[in-house]
Amino acid sequence: MVTDRTAPTETTILAAEVEGLLDSAEPHGVFRDTRECGAGLLLLALLLISPPTPRPKTDER
Image (cartoon, rainbow, N blue to C red; front, top):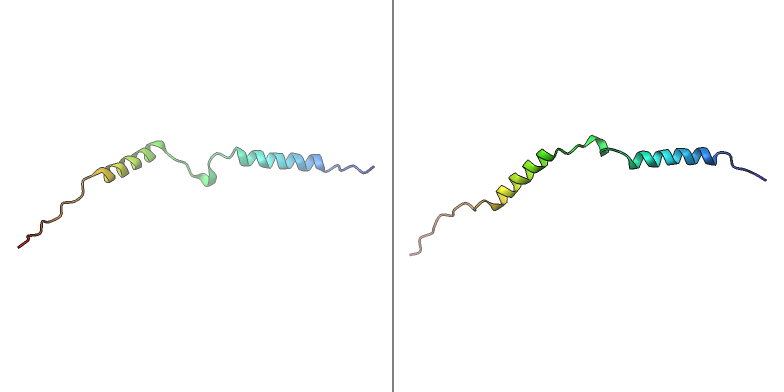
């Protein structure tokens, strides 16, 4: 009977790689600061709700 002795080692290595992928903190060092995101959203909201610029009136003759 032939037994495969490399399977437990390969399984252990594969399991470690999968755990490393699942437990990664932030991809490529991108960190989000809550205050910066909140300030950006506030600025965007203020720009969206601001009244439009007044248009000059045209004189109809």
